[in-house]
Image 1 (cartoon, rainbow, N blue to C red):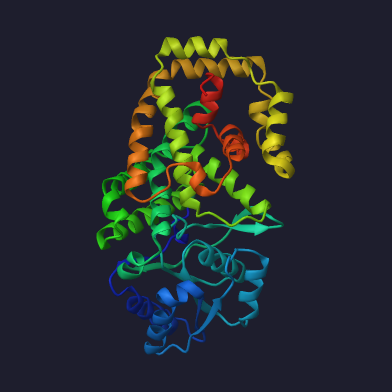
Image 2 (cartoon, rainbow, N blue to C red):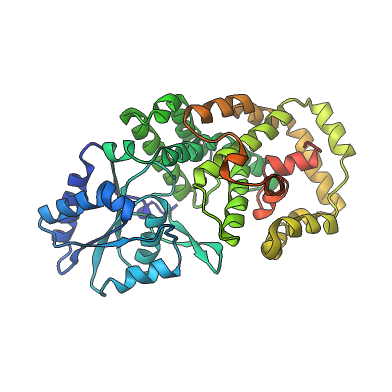
Length: 422
Ligand SMILES: [Zn+2]
């Protein structure tokens, strides 16, 4: 575990911009010859917090300048990264990323590759990626997640967070409530698929989700207490991922549904939908599957396992091709272990499922049921029907059936396939 890459300061509260400027000034004083920090924002985050932050930096004696993107749909892609680098010179300097997911990803990638540090000034409690050490970039019409840098510090002002657009706050809640299913899937992957697991991190991730579930009405009302609780949980989730060295503490089957729909919208040039809103819908589907697991006794599970036909490679590949189109080969390659399972491997997996059934039922019990998940999402202002995301019936169904092929991870969806749960 390399905690040297985690933020030194996490400051969520009133008046954060002033403390951010003091932090930057102290660093500038200790790094002789460093150029003034460069602030990066888009048109919205500039108004929300960038303008004030630049004034605070200048007030602290730093001759900072700003790069402000003005595209209506800013993406973390080659064009944005080049634009940022063209605005700059090769001198050592700190960056200040003012925004949420996309701005932070552009800056974290550029800073990682140019050997610079950056400070995050979060404008919305919308994603858990602020302290992430990877950046999902848009490359050739697809998404590629590449190594990047965590900020040296994360600042967020309570009032700015509370003024964030409501769908962004709801998206942050969706990206937190999902940790119940994400961690249950992680435990399942550890139990049945030999995936690396960390009990302390799993517990922290679930505790962060619980704190948001308890604050759902306050988050839905965008009260100062609600947005601060949500922002703290999102940062904690990012730290869990960074400390684990992978996204398992924060991402299970529900994220696979979200990624599937995201790629589809991207490939077809359709307007993007906030990550956490898609995750909210994915969480409902994962909760529904866990409900199905919860309803089965050990003998019923054993009987179903014995009855279910093993997946046939050609049929599975055909389903993946129908769902993924041009991206099918990558998904098929990811699924090699699942698709190429021989009789002996399948029987040993089935035995592990039956032997571990009491443990699997305990996992199911740790996940809020479908009705409770829907109630909490609605309280926080999230969509509770996939059609609200602008998705059609067919692509909703394709995602729910085939999104599990995105990665070689064992999730409740793979368990459901094995025991014949629809
Ligand atoms: Zn997420």
